[in-house]
Length: 233
Image (cartoon, rainbow, N blue to C red; front, side, top):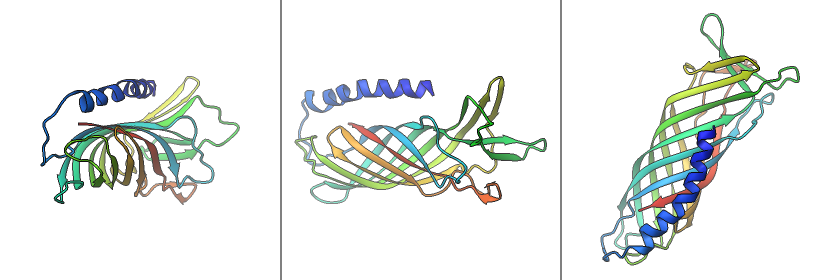
């Protein structure tokens, strides 16, 4: 988790200056067939949805997102386009859901919302390969990179790394292989803003776990991500 926070601070310090230099200080020839091919860096805060009544979110939950999106203009003015790309995402979620396994290697889901349970850490983290797909509208021109943008679409992902960590004193439980985890992720995205700084929203359309239950009720936790997206040409 400390690594994510360091990455957050580093990204906030270098992205604005780097983007300003790349866009404003370097003279460029006018290109009437320009594209908004862009690298992106996103920083998000996460809210968990569809939590069971006995489970609450706790601690900080956030993520870092990196990638490249290829721009395909679809009109003559080139201010409307389709974007498709490839990215990477790391996320951490703090909550009160214990994930373990019994002696038969079956997954155990249990809530920690109990005054008698005193623990130090309980969170799970994911790393994904993602494919962003966007419908893009902007006020850009071949002469200026200072413009308003509205991008909306979907983000497809695959969780190649999962880790759940529970610490209670000297007791430590780590799970990296959870059969109930739905490794294929899909969510809707909406990004709007001006120039470098843009607000970004992501809402997952499928829960983290499938065929999972907590106290004989379906466990259908989703996530809502809210943050900033930076674009670098």
